[in-house]
Length: 198
Ligand code: URA
Ligand code: SF4
Image (tube, rainbow, N blue to C red; front, side, top):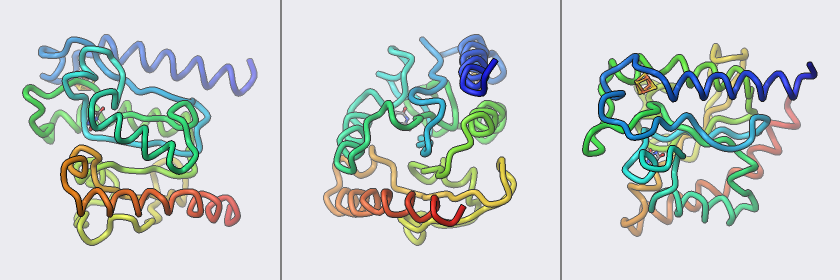
């Protein structure tokens, strides 16, 4: 099997495991688990918090209002959803969209970890503070949004994390919206720089 087929095979198997997972309490309330969506060879992986109502019904990440906004921002920088991989910290919808509990995020993290190890993206973009906290614990999103950070130990020695505000938070807040758009527009150059330094 070539590398491409192997990666596809691994990701499909992982997505199947997520669809049948019962490892935390969130499995009880879900309609569909939401493993992730997009290219298995993406250079960028976007990580949100957890599925909302629309995502739970369709089994796909970021397909509701926040997702539409994310898709528009991607288009603004010349990217299609199929060019990137989009997923969440927890793969099943928390009841009434509450924040995932620490034990739920902990139980689900193995899947995100595996997804990142298979895809090996150049850049991990976290959306919102919960997603950021998995990779950059202790930092404040108001202070570090739009600043690339290098961390070690996810799947390589040097992994770049780019923390952004969550599109749902920015959707109806004029100033956050402008900030998120401006941060997002830094992405193409950042990706180019990472490519050159590798
Ligand atoms: N918000 C998220 O964090 N993830 C989704 O998939 C949709 C909305
Ligand atoms: Fe399994 Fe994650 Fe869903 Fe919990 S949220 S049941 S760990 S897939």
